[in-house]
Length: 299
Image 1 (spheres, helix red, strand yellow):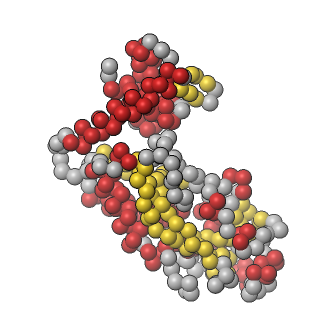
Image 2 (image 1 turned 90 degrees about the vertical axis):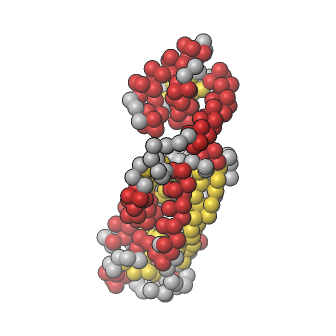
Image 3 (image 1 turned 180 degrees about the vertical axis):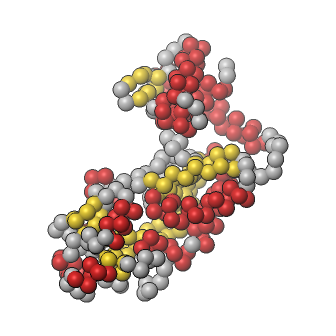
């Protein structure tokens, strides 16, 4: 049997949709469908149940999964051992990160990695949601929660600080904030509660429970722009807000939060040259940006 058919089967099993599998494989969704049909004909059984929301493994498909995952591990081992026509890591690495960290910290530096390794390609998924290694949404994931399940390699990447910020003109026309109790006079900008993808982004309850929110968004950059426009106060990453002269920290010494970025990748991929190169570069980048990520309490 053709391993390539099984590769398509694995991606569909992990993504659950033809479009998602096709995106990961770099082909059209019709190609994925055709490959699955060919494999099912060879196996003599339906491997997926077609549903409105996508494709679900049948009992035959679930029984097959462990054996195909073992095949995948063997193929990865052969790929790593095989000599290449060029020096250095090659191939695609998909890096998933939170929106702000991915956009402001990683994106400006990742170009250097591909310049250093011209046969390496990087996809940066800077999204305001959790990305899952188990679904193969990314090869390396930088998250706010430490992964506790699955066969993964996990490393503490870096801590970073957040503070309460307001636009200077907004603060000038509003009552002075010298204690947490004074926050009752202010409007707030924050995340949409029922769409919050991690409890690590809950800040205001520990500081002040607002009576109302002037503006909420799933996007940290949207919150930042709303604060810049004078909509109210918000807890923002220092690496995003400290560089902006329009904004000022509020309640220094009280409204300060520290969070941790964790980096993880599948254990079976840790020996691949492209993964090692990207993993090491991400660690170096985080260390080099320490002044932005962990600024002094006083500016």
